[in-house]
Every structure is written in C-alpha cells, then in structure tokens.
Length: 97
Image (cartoon, rainbow, N blue to C red):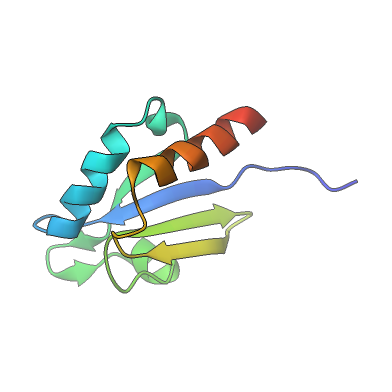
C-alpha cells in the first residue's frame, strides 16, 4: 500500500519582482493559503539561493512541489497564478489533510 504524503509547496518569489507581487496579491485573496503554500525567497542579494537552484528555479514567480526530497511538480509564470488557481490547489490539499 502506497503511503500518501502531502508534498511541500513553495512559491518562489523575489523582492522587486512585479509579477511576484501580482501573484502574492492573488494568493492573499484565498483563505488558509498559509497552511498549504510556503512563500520562499529565491535570491539572497543578487544570487539564487541553493534551495532555489536545487529546486530548478530559474525565474520568478515559480511554484514548486517537493515530495520525499524530490521536485514532483514545477510551474513558472504569473499568468496562470490567479486566485481561482490557488483556491483549487488549496482546496485539493486541505481536503486531503
């Protein structure tokens, strides 16, 4: 029987990134997002963090799901990150909790 672990979901953002600010605004419209998604800074100064590099982040905003230490899903670009997108994602994972 396969154990059902819930992936850890990181939204990689960086300071001064207008698309990141837009996405954070969309995310903030959704109740309980903090229980599912972790806002993660992708850069320290001008350098990508090791965690961002290990997660395959090359642009922000990027949503990354990590399960058992492996990236299982990655999506980049602010156009698809609407409040409805986040609502669906959060409902899916809160239902499984």
